[in-house]
Length: 447
Image (cartoon, rainbow, N blue to C red; front, side):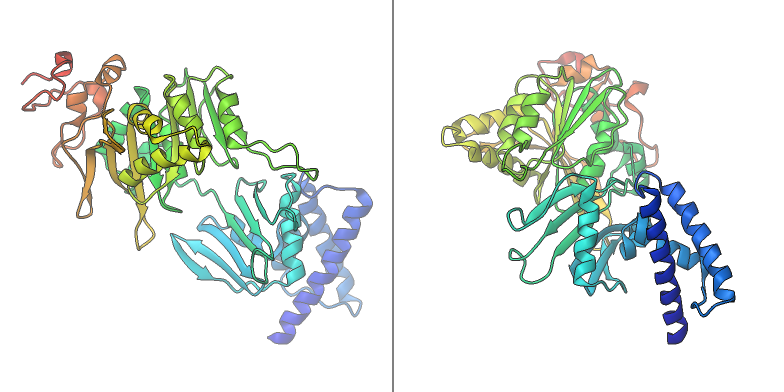
């Protein structure tokens, strides 16, 4: 078996060398001409097999495996390519050349891939080539996007101890709409209908959760509920959102060049987005002082959504009250706290469970009131046991739901499981005991 494997590797090495030489002679671009390269590999393998019959060249044991290996080496990312092509793999990371891991369904696995130090550096260089970004001693971190939309993050020594640390987070779009999230069990139909109505009504929504909890996927699904007539501007550190809006402009940040100039940060992109006649703004994730610019944009009457790392909806609100303070000493709690209370309407929190499944664990509303440094929140949906159930809270701005054609009381009335979940546009009459908005009697549903 070892001898057979050795012959296969020898034959693969021969074929790869011939393919690389032909690519160089013909000035082909493997990235832009993948079909041409694939045909070239097939032709070289066929020619090599004929020559191996009448010479001392090592034979090709498995033609398909040899062609795939050579193609991955010259047009893909070598031994990692099969994991990039595997739809069940969510993330790939390299701790050291001999320890390559993947994540499937939220769980990590050690692979059989063994690289060399030079192979890791070569792979990173090829991955960064299409992004125009770099990693070196002066810039030991880099975030970039691969051609297939996967997100690459690299850290090199002496920030890491010895080896290069490489993470490739594949954007596995398991759902593109709230209905698909319902089918996956991430959210209940009742909560999905409410979130859809909140987005259509123009409420500001924050999606919170831990790493790999599904924040970007939920943000994409919420974006699919934005009315088609609206112009959407999205800003991100690296392109990850994939909206289906017909009028959509996406922007991403940029690193400084070799001279240390030309950097474009998220704060700048949010400000520029406001000059582009947006009807809706989406921020991929707020991590630092750009939270201040987001709050200012939301406080100006522009509906928006963003994601945020947090362990709960309450902690997400607290974090939004803290991050803007990083923008400067002149930004104080006295300004930030009431701005958060009046600008943020809905916070949705997700969590990844032990079995790898993602679930919405709570949906809270900010009624717009604050006492001291504490922003008041109201639970709209909360988890009881393993079920997301209707709580007793109500969202702000009932008049926006009314203008969008939603009967808020009927929308939030907890439906019976045996009857299913009514769609808000069906105008079904649902009894309730008290109008939660006495100043808006028109949204009450009569018995």
